[in-house]
Image (cartoon, rainbow, N blue to C red):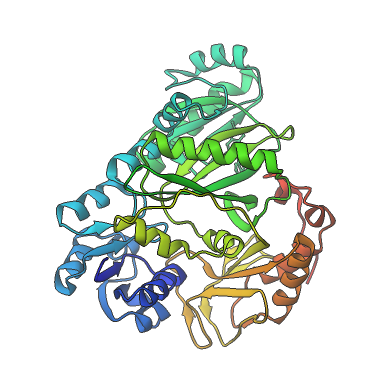
Length: 447
Ligand code: MV4
């Protein structure tokens, strides 16, 4: 097992990893930018190294500075968390060159899933259902128009280097093609430095349902059931839950098998998530694979009663999985609490937290790095806490979430708590009647 683990991240996920390491008797090294001096991850790690100024490129994304921190602390493993360098194959490669274990898959696996066309080709070869489309790079808008005749409008063009919604356009007819093509390519070039595009049939009003998997270094891959992440706003997830209200036993079996086939196809090592779009007939299609621990992993932890970070560290150290899949024993829902003004287009609202009273009680979990007196810096992601509730049924889970949201008091900054309070009261949401476009038509009532 590792002796000392460096966490190349900040915020709640850095603290989350530290907690598990303590339980596993692994020493921890926090790294921090000058803007994060007062963060709890710095206080709770065994050692902490300042790696630079607030700007991410000069701190959490700066590989030479991270490696210097590894050098001076003698860490033997790096946990990348999510975001920042978590899906950067070059970083994983550098770790290997330094003789330090990158807690995650190999650079080859990261690259293979990072290029969306290559990922899709891999999945088609593995027999995982994929959305009909161009099958490879499109050379021109004219080629796209020709192919769209066969596929049938609406279609969607996506950047092969993309993911998470950037460089993506829905096209409804030939006349709209050229303009969307030009704009998507400009956006892709600016965002990823790669404007390669592919095309798919556009699935209308789908759900986003993802399957958590874990693979070991001995060729075993298991699944740990789904998370429904359809409640999103501009490709930012706000609520995740398990079981999905749309799930059936038969569908979970089929999607679980497909996710395992996806992992097996690349000999996957580590925790990963296979994202699917599910249409109203319960047809499901591979969308993307995330090769990292995700923000919403606690939802799975609560319904299967396992520590996913512990499992992740164990497989990274070479331990074997025992081969059985995990099915949900409870219902769990997570609300992302962001420092944002929900009455003002969810604008980031960093600043000083003057008072902080966490929700507590049976079935309530709060993962956060903040506290009263902490100042939310303006330089990073606006998520400040995750409120996670579990109960026997979805209905009880929502009731508990409403209770927990009501007692969660954060003063000094605006948060997404009022949004969640209104969402929990929404009739369609309560019925489980939603899809990825749900929030497009959701209106906040006045304060
Ligand atoms: C799609 C789609 C419909 N049809 N692909 C959004 C982000 C990127 N991961 C892929 N996305 C989508 N791909 C086809 N063929 C709809 C979306 C999509 C979406 C997917 C999941 C969650 C929220 C979404 C919001 C808008 C569009």
